[in-house]
Structures are given as structure tokens and as C-alpha cells.
Image (cartoon, rainbow, N blue to C red; front, side, top):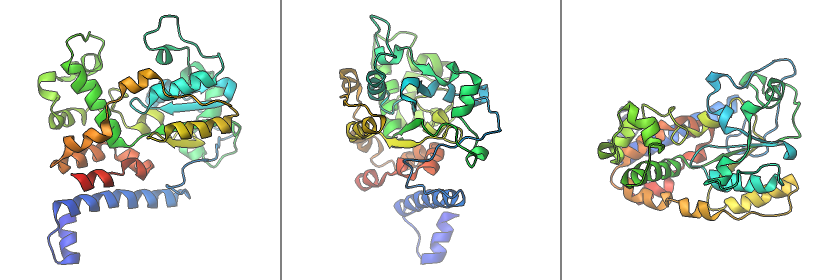
Length: 316
């Protein structure tokens, strides 16, 4: 249909690049219109007001609310919650909040992954009353606020960078290792669904596989599915990129924390170089890039800049 419409307007047949860019533009325009109808500006996400209904009791941790119950971390002594899906700088972010918590969060002695094994308070650990104060439905967004004093942070990442990082780390890298045990992600979650390293380390084959199983694990689930911004009234949205350290320093100022935490050595060793490697993966394969964007269209609609592939498109 897009091809015929283009030809009717311009009198010419569109190139593949023009068709692809027109689809991306359509996604952005739909997002703008949806946010306009909700009286929101999709490009001014930070400092959203926290609003919770007075009367509507809402039990957050039901099975239908999935990842939010495990992904939303509550730092009560800072009156702060934060959520970052897997492959969204989780180690750096948790290191930051672990230090910021001032000793209220600690990891068992000898932990292999201290910041991930620490005694974090998750949404599911709270009483139903406290859950109801922090989590709302879309219909409650115009209600009265009971928890405006809370800082509630949603950390997001470019969807293509995140997908490439997960693919290289959890699929290509783990499948190439000889020392992996049965606890690795692809064995616990994907092999029972028909995954095999021999076949699915190929990018196109992995996309063919994972597009049907996005809700199986948080590493490849949409970020909006993990952190549910339609349920949780985030006050701040922070994009995880090369400026994350500066953004965390700004957050420290807001929280009244007078120190700045550098990323841990474990985080630096864990980097996959996703942004630089995306060029090699998608060169000559714009169709695959388009499919990845389509898999994460809900993230694109929530925040169009999460799906900005202008630089990558200019290279491939």
C-alpha cells in the first residue's frame, strides 16, 4: 500500500530506502498524534508529574503485570524507584544506586555478581497499599498525587543498540564458549522452544526465532513491557548512552547525593560494542533492521528517539 501511495503522489516508484524511511516517519507521526491526544509532548519526557488516584485500589503484582514486579527496584531511604530492562546499563545503574543507598543495600560476601545479587527491594516485596501508591493505570493519570515526593526513574536505550548487545552477548558469545553450563540464557529459555546454536547464531535466523518469543525473557522483551510506563508513573526518563555518567551526576544533584560513581570494571568488561558492530551486522540488510524496529514498535511509540537509526541508515 505504501508503494502505491508514494507512486500516486510523486509519479515515481520509491526506492527501498525511501520506503523504509517513510515507514519510520509514519511511526514517529503516529506517536506524536497519540501523545497529542493524551495532552503529552513525546519529546519532553523528563520531569513528568507523578499522579496516583485517590480512590482506585490497584494491586500491582498480578501475573498479568509480568516483568514490572521483578524489574522495578525500590530504594526506600531515597524515596526513589528505578527500572532498567536487561541490556540497558543495568550493572552501572545498580552500582550507582547501591552506593547511593548508603549501606541499606548489600550483597552476600563472595557474590559473583554483587550488584545483581544484592538485597534489592522489588515492587513485589512491598505491601499492596504501598504498591497502590506507586503504580497506577492509564485511567488514573489525571487523579490526585499521593507520592509526588518520590523520584521514579525509567532508564531506556536505543532499541537497535540494545538488541545487538543482547544478540552478541547472550547468543553469539555464549554459543561460542565451551565452558558454559546449563544456566545460560539460551539453554534455560530458548532451547526448549526449538533454539539451536548451530542455526540461530545467524542474525536473520535469530530474528526469525525471537520475534515469536519476545515475552519469554527480559533480555529481548520490549523495554516498555519490562518497565510498564503505562502502569508506573515515572517522573524521569534517562537515555542510557555515552553520556550516562553525566546524567547520573545530575540525578545525584536531584537526590541530594554528593558523590559520583564511575561505572564498575565488570560493566566495562561486559560491553559488546553494539553501536559499532551494528554497521557490520546490518550492512546490505536494511530489511533486517526494519524487522528489529518493528519488533520494538511499542518502544518506538512510547519514545520515538529510542528508535532513531538515522546514523546507522546513513552507513548501511
